[in-house]
Image (cartoon, rainbow, N blue to C red; front, side, top):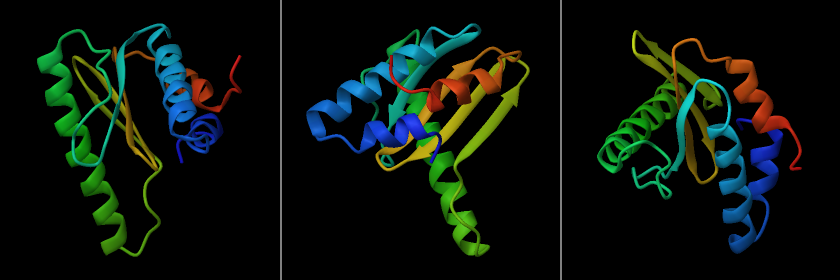
Length: 127
C-alpha cells in the first residue's frame, strides 16, 4: 500500500471512501512542483481528472494502468510481493505511481519534486 492514510480512506464505505480519496488527491495537487494527480482503475479508467487537459489525463491513465499491471505481473513472475510505489523520471517531469485496492494513484510533478513530501501526504492523518 502506498501509505497508511490512503489505506484508511479505502476502508470507508463507498460514499465516504470517494470523499476521503478525493481529499488526498486534492492535497497532493497542492504540493510544490506537483502538476496533477488522479486515481486510475486497473482498466485505465480514471477519477475526475485533475490534470491540465482531459486528453492528457486519459493518456496518463492508460499509461499508469499499463505500467501498474506490468509491475504487478512482473513481481508475480519473479515470486516477489506486488509493488507499492514506483517512480518514473524523465527530463520533462516525474510520475509517482502507487498501488491501492482500487487501482493506482498517479502524481505528475516537475523533475525536482520532493518525493518524501508526496509520501508524507499519503501517510498523514486527515486534517
